[in-house]
Length: 522
Image 1 (cartoon, rainbow, N blue to C red):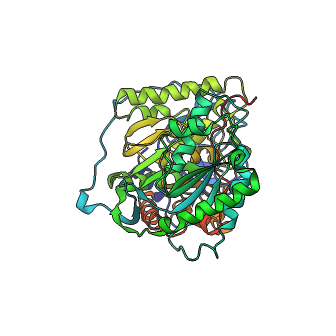
Image 2 (cartoon, rainbow, N blue to C red):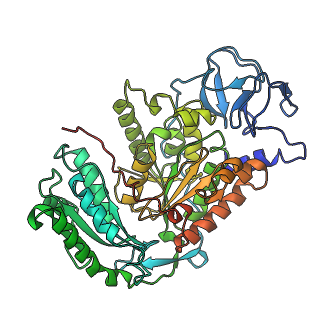
């Protein structure tokens, strides 16, 4: 279903006596409740009466469904009737069975290049241009650790640099620690170590990192010199390392770390924002705490915004591989080449094997919050989640934390767990995160800030201190998907210029650096 079709679906219910349910596609056999609807409520638009109470964001059947018949939402199969179902019946995980769906991958057959805005008409923002030409949206100094042994030292070094001590350096957004639980007690080689090293290296080299300090105990499996060599990191006036064993322990390393950062402050502060093209914006797309409205408002509105960003030359990173399962064929069909489509299917196959026999999301069950919000299974969640990327062609597929080099819509293989997923996207180069939520996820990130989009007005009103924009206006009938997409795009530009997001104002992000903990712990 296109953005235009969804606009029509929402706008069609804008009459004064607005239907309590939203029809998303003429071929659907379910409709979605705008609000909690009581049993016995007449639904003239569908010619039926509800048979049970229906929570907001949940579905009812619009006609008789025989046992085993596909359940269609957005004219896409989200499961199968587990019993005979009468019109007006509340449809959810109790009567929608999860099963494998036959897919036509059509690798690259529906590819159509995005239409680009002429360079002279491209949107702009005030960014920080680094010496190598990359553009930053923030200006942080980071304190990193090769393993968990340096965690306390890194935190204490950063704690020294209070707002009062940084007042003389107004262009520095903060001195922040990047603490993780890996580096030792893990496989010394192979994919787990590769993932950790790519993630750490991506953050150290990130455009939003003005300078960095790397702490090592001196006996980690993620051996310092090997890490530096693999990630092609060289010591300089803006990047230093400290080894606790060599310095004589924690106290001396903390003192040495404070001195090292103090020596970096002046140079890191000598930046100024200048007007640059929106082509330098790279958005990591996230959703968490989804509800039945996420796929109707926040996700497609964000998708409309990403279509605008891509038209202006920017990049959108769709991720959370386990949360596109069931709709991955909609991406492979519009892949730039068949090879790109096959890369995505290979990652899906990896996840199916990785999760085989386990009680996890890709095997059908969504989180309790997602389920309470109206999502029956992973197929329904994936249907809404994939809409964050809009209808843009899929330009490439990346491994976790790999540097993203191609503009347009790309996919990065990550888990669905938000902190791990966003960490991989930022390591790949995302300089902003857009995070949709229906239940009200509280999340932030550094050095790339998070902008949070609420799917419904009641939650936005309840959690306005955490939410940056209310996409519930679409459900309320006060904005179209296209209008909301334009608002999101304009707000992205403001945050790229330095306007703080709600999570930044709350000081969130210092604990959300979570490299993917894949592999064996010994």
